[in-house]
Length: 97
Image (cartoon, rainbow, N blue to C red; front, side):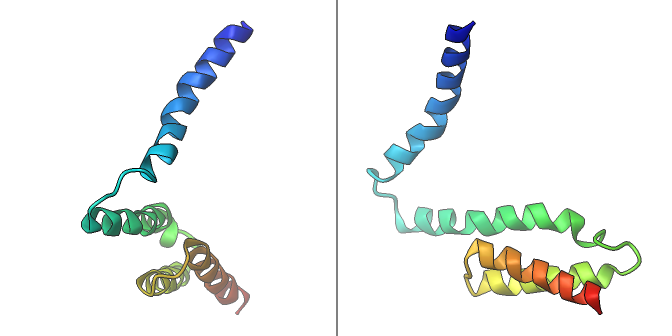
């Protein structure tokens, strides 16, 4: 049973760790690097958007305001953590009003 668990963990970990070692050694064209830089913001938008209008069902503008702040921070290329914290803080402040 232990060998099965070790084997399954290796089969799972190898495809996840392999790109980490390969991506530094392969030079990508400029457009690929720009595309890869945008992915975190696209993923953030896909994660946040479904819940934007349902943060508080009676007050959908609170979620929309948080989303607008997140978009503005993403446009100025803020760190993903700053984008999340900025939108969360905005929603929190509007909830306290």
